Image (cartoon, rainbow, N blue to C red; front, side):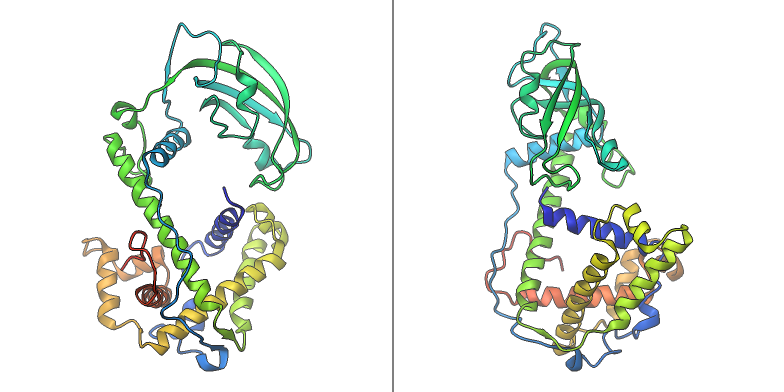
Amino acid sequence: MKKKTAIVIVVLAVLAALLAGGGIWLSKRWDENKPYASYNMKKYIKLGKYTDLEGDFVQADLSGERIQELTTLYFRASDVSILAEDPAKETVQKGDFVRIGFEATVPGVSEHVEEGLRREKWELEIGRNNFIPGFDEQFIGREKGEEFEFKLKFPADHFEAELAGKEGTFLCIVHAIGKMEINDERAKGLKTPDGAGLFTELEELHTYLKDELVRQAAASNEEILRETAFATARVLKFPEREQEFYLGVLEKKAQANGKTSEEYLAGVNYKGGVKGYAEEIKSDIERELFLFAVAKEEGLGVTTKEFNDYMQTLRGGNAEVTNAQIYETHGSRGEIIRSMTTGKAMKFLVENAKNYPKQGAAAG
């Protein structure tokens, strides 16, 4: 996992934890019907060039090899076996697919990291190096049922900062040896991403994975385009009360759990502390202001019809779902409008970019 991606995931997780229970902040600080009307945008941000922009955009990798790799990871994450054991195989060789168990000890790491270093049953292909370099090699020549121990260093650029460059002691066992077998029957043991049902065939999983890769490419391309456009703008005045509100929510959450803000952030695995969190929030607010400024400049406000149509979509065809229930799940009316506004601004940037790829383009 790339470091930047890991940071983004952590920040999103922290935001989700802080704002759990419904959107409460927008309606108190923004006009719910015009989410940018509380500020005179020209006093806060000066727009630069935001149309006819080019960027180093990415294409989703939908190759068979990539889909196979993600399919394997999905089975592994779901704890559904894809090993067809070969009873005649007694010794591990390169290219074998094995089921192992391991427990690693690394001095000075936190409890949540330690938990991730224990696996009772874990399947992998020997020679693929899909864990850490050198790990697979330790199994070559080992016999089924054999327990053994070795030391190995984690890479200096390992995505988990606590493990980067550190040496661990691994206690391992070989449970079974065979080959990988992925088919429709095994796929039926996989839960769908929403956890509500099961896949009925392997192709359903492949379709989901391809859609997810396209979605991720779209998100990456939108970020590239937004950052390219934002770089031409200039923040004239930062709205301090926006940042103060987030920090206030953080403090209240922390107090409710009998912790300081620093302790609360550490508890949700955010490494940057309050200072780092405040900087992340500032960055997000500046970019949101930028998108609101584009929306205002281009007349992209959310109409009553657009809002009502979107609310109908959120009802999912169930007329008994009330607005209050939707707000409880998706945030306040103002928060929904705010999200729709930035979405329209982002769509405008995409449609007016020069070399934006069709695959992975922002959803309408």
